[in-house]
Image (cartoon, rainbow, N blue to C red):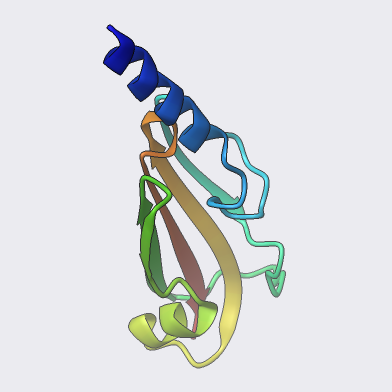
Length: 108
């Protein structure tokens, strides 16, 4: 039983670690989240481009992280040379055991 309590304590600690998660504040569910919000660094164009590009990074247990979710990478992936909008999609499962951030850009 002590092992179960210890595991629960570790999971709670990981779910409360603020530095392991994106700085942008957005709604987050304890069990699961899938939220898309405009990026704080958005170019704020009133029009949405015809092309879309995405770039993703992810973390597991707030211990291992990899990927490139930069605007530059998303634009390259979508064949975009003129960025019009930038959004951020965040997915988290089980209090942050798995966390991914996807940058979504539109443009021409």
